[in-house]
Amino acid sequence: MKQRNIPRHIGIIMDGNGRWAEMRGLPRFEGHKRGVERVREVIEAVTGIGVEALSLYAFSIENWMRPEEEVSVIMELLESTLQREFINFMREGIRFKIIGNRERLPEHIRGLIELAEKETAGNRNLVFQCALSYGGRDEIIRAVRKAMAQRTAPEAVTEEYLAGLLDTAGVPDPDLIIRTSGEQRLSNFLLWQSAYSEFYFTSTLWPDFTKEELLEAVHEYQSRSRRFGRVDSSRNLLAENPFGLPGA
Image 1 (cartoon, rainbow, N blue to C red):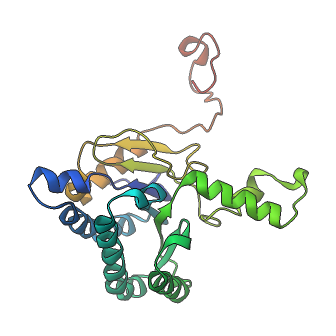
Image 2: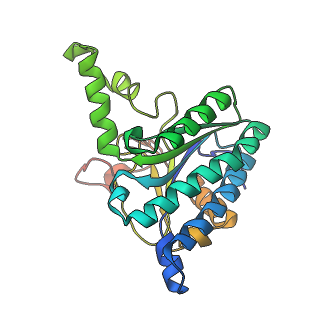
């Protein structure tokens, strides 16, 4: 793995747990349990190559519409995983935080999250953001409401100001977003933050996603040219884009 051009922030849409279980004739919650095991492997992989932030899409705000039994299992897995991983977070210098709308989370889980966030706040090796009860549109709406509550003057609302009101304030935007299971969409994940992200889609279901495939995604990212809308003077843009279309 080349140590240059390592993405500062990687976001992962962990998709395919249910399908993984169904393909094996297992109940869906078995897929979620297997998926949790992959989280530890991914955390170890990104810290090993020097990534600064990792955001995992664990439970969308739309997922509350899933069967009550499945939601209950996911909440139990979250609770047990957080309790188990807390020691690892402290030992490995990982700062843990939740992004998302916490109002619908069970009270005891909110308390556990707040404790973990407080205790790991000083850790500096990796920011681990777990997107829980999260939706990108909901996040933006909540940020706008904060601005309105602060009676912010319209001319004071800049990109930097609004970004500071988002759940991810203080964390760099994701350079690379990975989605497993073959789907090729954001599904309401980090809509504001992903404006210039690179994307890597794989047909691998999340419970089968390995450290090796993560490194493959990073390697592909390293081969891409990110211009953020700027002109690359080393290329003949007139020949490549004779009509001057934006984003070419």
